[in-house]
Length: 458
Image (cartoon, rainbow, N blue to C red; front, side, top):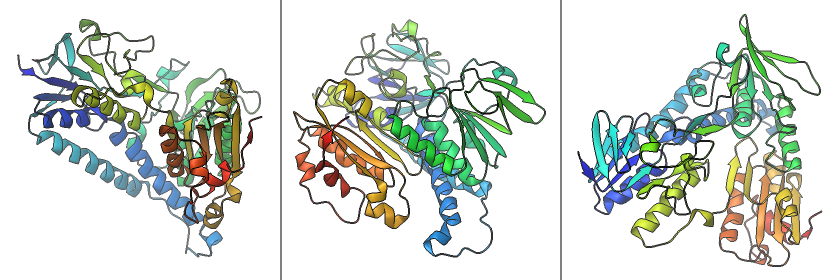
């Protein structure tokens, strides 16, 4: 039975980075992957979807060319085969580069296959048992397919199978009005599909503030996306060549008929086929592996990183998991998962950049909270680009003067939010940014202006 200094299960965002770091420290490392190197991000998540978003943005700008004084001859043609080929090439370059690095790194043994625990210090893959006192689980997650009526008789797509689509759906129905559903909805509307988004909650992205949800709804509806909210009793059916989604909404027709269906209702961890019980690794009721602040599981010598531990569902949180584990193991640096601030983006156009508390959370925190706001119509860079939808909001603790959170919805806001994020990590008073001289004309230059006009949060 081969003995390694470390075994890593899964080649998502945390696994390879940890493998390279441990191998460079002289450890003998085995990394096991049963499917595609790079995990969700490279293969069905960030990389391909943002490539598709870029193509959709190009189509949108081409249709708006006259607004900028540019004449484009003839009709705008969207070639889905070429769009998919471009996306596939970007994905392949990333995946193949990472695979090559794994196969050619000293001290690193890259194995293909499905790893399952046989004991707390051993896994089996391809009929072979591998042993180590340190095992790291980085198996990611997959789309949740809910047990709604008609699901077994109705064809559907998930975020993964959408990557195989090389045609334009006539009418794409999306069940789920959150981050994944909104990105695909706006994207395919821009490509030319009729799109209907069905959401069970009373508003889109209901984790965000109400006014953020309202502006996002306005953004997608202005582009022709149909939004159905309060769909409490969803059921599916196949009727001839059409897919029918029955809804119980306060307003609108009782059913929606379309050509294709995308389920975007959440994610679940890939932990149900690892024999975790044989390793003594505990999971919560949803299947996420329970970990402590250093990402160690209930079993000594076993860690869980990335989406499968429930500590975050993003590439950046997975990579930070690697940084935390490596710092504790190799650098004698007691980094903790609880030290990081919640931060993410919604990549509709314009994007939403989020960090820290929402307004709703700030109101409930019991502090004296100040707020600075500005509509994108008063941001020169947005006006010059002809992209003025959205607004920016920053929340500040009136006593400590530290920034509590921000919601930036507008052109360039997925980048601008990092200026706030870094200041929050520094625990510096907001006056540091308020007195800074930012470059004109940019979106970020208005952040000091917001902080110079703070008012009590109502």
